[in-house]
Each structure stands twice: as C-alpha cells, then as structure tokens.
Image (cartoon, rainbow, N blue to C red; front, side, top):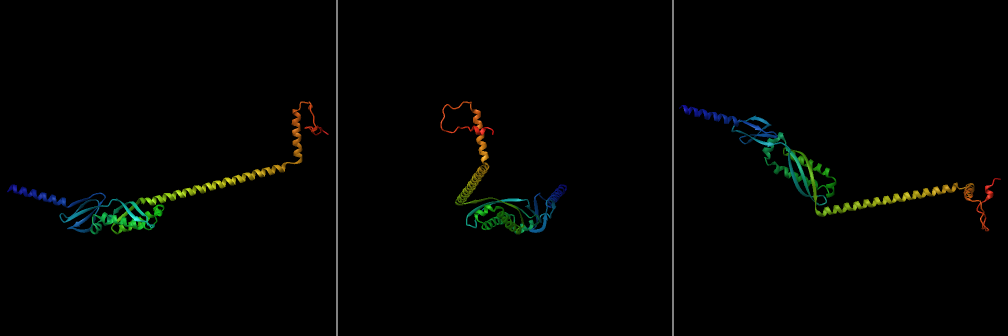
Length: 267
C-alpha cells in the first residue's frame, strides 16, 4: 500500500510537470506565433519571448517575419514583340501584425501560392509597356513600376515588399546582333562628324593665317616710301665701301660704277 501511494504520487508529479511544460511556449527571434485553439485561429498574435497557453487545447504556429529573398527568371514579350528574359531578386517580409490572417487565408506555402505568381505577373505586365531598347535605357523607371505593382499585390496578402533588383535583361541573339550593329553605326557616324568638325576648324585656321599674312604684307608695303628706298640704297653702298680695298678694277666696261661716290659726299 505504501509503495502504491509512492507510485501514484510519482505519476501525479509527472502529470503536473507535463501540464506545466505544455502550458508554456517560446517564440524565437524573427518570428511571430499564431495561436490555434482546437485548430481555430485566434486573434492573438504572440510576439518574441515566453508565453502561456492552455495545454492540449491551444497550440502555436511560428511564422518567420524576417526579410526573405526570392529570385525569379521570367520570359515575356516587349512592346515591339522582342522576347525578353528578366532576372530579378525580390526582398519581402510577412506583415508581423497580420500573421494570423496570412495563416488562416493562405497558409504556410504563401511563397509558391502568392509571391512567385505575383512576381511573374508584374514583370510580364510592365515589360509589355516598353520596347526592348527602352527596357535597357529606362531600367530605373521599369524597376520602379514593377516594384509599385508587385508591392500592391503583396500588400493584399499581408506581405510587405522591401525592394526589388532587376539583375539582367536577356534578349535573343538576333536582337543582340542588331543592337551591336546599331552601336557600331552610331560610333562611326560620331567619328565622321568629329573628323568633319576637325577639318572645318583646320580650314578656318588656315584661312585666318593666310589673312593675317596678307594683312602683314599689306602693312609692310604701306611702310615702303621713296625715302626708305633711298636710305636702304645708301646702307648698301656704305657696306660695299667698307669692304673696298682702295683699288680700282683693272677691267672697265660701259656699266655704271656700282658705288655712287657723289651720294656719299657731303654737299
């Protein structure tokens, strides 16, 4: 009888311990707890930390509310009917204040049921509004529109869009060749235009230089007077006289002497 009491006491203690452990729960950091009572979702949302619950009646479903990353590759047609494959990275999170509604209306597979289809639909809808070249040249604008549309879709399902990054637009090989040919033609046209401008500038410089030389010659001609010519003649005769050794030429002809002695004498 004594042993029976001990066994019963031990069983009671075990039951109490089980009930105590079943009455507490812990919500880890970066999560929220959805409180379920006999399978039904309760409005109470459990935050991070230690909580009590009714044992064997209430359970807690943890849902992560940290920022999550989803990468997707979608193929769609542009406005000019070019096939474009868009690689995008999406950062989103579950609304911490609505995890109970998310669990109740969507469940834990919200990524495959909501996020992936929303990304695909947003990318295809926005891609169709731009030509292939505009997708490249207006990339920030395209990214902003995709973000706006995707953000509205996720908000309807209790999720928050943090950011998106369009990593790449991939086009067909034919389109890439066409773009390369166009860029080459534009570069050649720009090079030809620069050469034409250079030639034009060089021609203008030559014209200006020729004009300057003509003007200088004109000014020099204006400076030449009868007095200046006579002075130059005297200077030449003086230099010749300085070199004369005092002897007269042994051969004379009918030519006029090359030195005008009268011009060197003083009247």
